[in-house]
Structure formats: structure tokens, C-alpha cells
Amino acid sequence: MSLFIKSNKMFFLFILIFSTLISISSNSWMGCWIGLEINLLSFIPLISNSNNLLNSEASLKYFLTQAIASINFLFSILLKLILMKNFEINFLLTILINSSMMMKMGSAPFHFWFPNIIEGMSWMNCFILMSWQKITPMILLSYYMNKNYMMLIMMINTIIGAIGGINQISLRKILSFSSINNLGWMMSSILISENLWMFYFIMYSFFISIMCFMFYIMNIYLINQLFIFNFNYLMKFLIFLNLLSLGGLPPFLGFFPKWIIVNFMMMKNLYIINFIFIMMSLITLFFYIRIIFSCILFNYLKLKWFKMNIKNNFFSYIIFFSLISILGTIFSTLFFI
Image 1 (tube, helix red, strand yellow):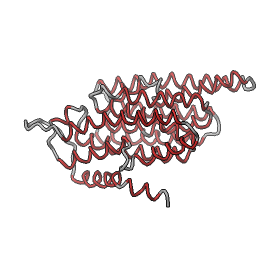
Image 2 (spheres, helix red, strand yellow):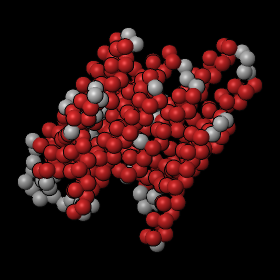
Image 3 (cartoon, one colour):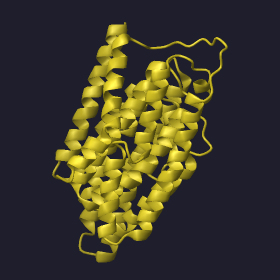
């Protein structure tokens, strides 16, 4: 039975990857829409689990929101085909298409489904939703976008992503608001160039994969679980380093892509947007530091039952990836050579 479930998951995971490639390589809007639909229908079986009510609820919510976004997208591309020559309608259609793509990836102000759905998922599904599921909407957004509208959405993303994470105690919700904040940075990078977006996206996926993997092997979902977590001081230290890198603190690798974006925005005289981005990054660092405090400073000596998913070879992977995060300053100096 377990082998059947694993082969089932592998099948849907393959379709998930394949559907993204269909959307990206399609030469028509209808082909992009078909790819998005296949993507949606392949991700739902990965989320849903009959033994867990939260997973079933998350899959239903995900289906409804994505279906609404798909209808919106289909409606706008059909209108675009019919009313191609009218300039005012064309302007409205860019906003409609952009909005449906933003709803697809959980961007503010269409983000309300995103933290709720992530709360009902396993860490591995959280990683897929926060990284891979953003590829198709972002690339479709770059094909046909309204720059002024995008700049407004960028700022809203960074503000909501920073402020929304302050009062959260769930690690999944904190990472989901961090993802919304990073979407603002991704949108600014895609306005500059697609290569810069790809670089930022790979870096962000790398950091979020380390965090999701660490929390998965420790079987931890809430901040207060870190108070009573007296497992391994090295592990706590690695959480500390990777969170600071994800927040974009200067000595670490996470600062490097943000620094490049800040430089490009300064060259384009976008000083107000730059200021908002940097201030909101400080707020995200504040709620990362709150997790770090609970990791490092608090330690209950009472025995608590924890079911760890730990194997010895996991540590070597995590230490290796964390070293890459720490050596970010060396990578950033190579940029100037």
C-alpha cells in the first residue's frame, strides 16, 4: 500500500513539473491556461490526505481559489481576442490578466487564501507551494504586464508580507508571509530582467528549501515548540544562520540578490519603493529574530515527547547547505571581478 502511495505521488509530482513546462513553452494564451489547469489538478492529490482533515480542507480551498483565478484568466484572454484594437479595454485586460496571475501565486492583495492553505499542509507541500508553484504565474506575468500596476502591487506585497507575519506563532504562517514579502522583491526583479528574476528565485527557493527541510526533520510547526526543543545546539545554530540569510542580513548569501535589486532600483531613481523595500525587510528580520530568540535563549529541561524524522545523513546535507549560506560574502565579492 505504501509503495502504491509513493508511486502515486511520484506520478502527480511528474505531472506538476511537466505542466509548468507546458505553460512556459506554450506560444498561445490558451496553451498557458491548459498548463495551469493541469498544474492545479496534479497538485491537489499531493495536498489531500484522507487521514488529515486539515489537508482535505486545504486542498478544497486551494481548488476553489485557483479555479476562480483560472476563470478570470480565461475570461480576460477571450476578451483580449475579441476586443484587440480598443486601447482602453486593452489597458483593463492587462490588469485583469495580471490580477489573475497574482491570485494564482498568492500575491497581495489576493493573498488571503495563501497562509490558511499553507497552515493545513505538510512541510514538503509548503515548499512546493512557496517555490515551484510561483514559476508559471511569474513567467506569464512577465509576458504581459502593466508596469505601474506592478509597482503598486510590489509595495503592497512587501508591506503586507512584513506586517502580517508579526503576530503569528505558526512557523508555516510566518514563512508564508515571508513568501508574500519576497514576491514583492521577485516582481521588482522581473521588471528589471528575467535573468535577475531567475537568480533571485533560485536563491529564495534554496533558502526556503533549507528551512522547510529543517522543520520537517525536527517535526516542528509552532514557535513555542522551539522553547522546549533541547535536541542539538548545532541544529539550533543552523536555524539561526539560515533565518538571517532568508531575511537578507548583509554577511549572508540572502543579502546578495536583494542588494543587486536595490542597486538597479537606485539606478532607475525608484527611491521611495527602495526605502519601503528596505524598511519592510527590517520588519521581516524582526520576526525571524523572535524565532531565533526562542531557539537559542529559551531551553526547558523538562522531558518532552518529540517524534523526529532524523537520519544521520540529513545533518551532513544541512551543514553543507548552511555553509553555502554563510559564505555569501565570498560569492558577493566575486560579482565585482
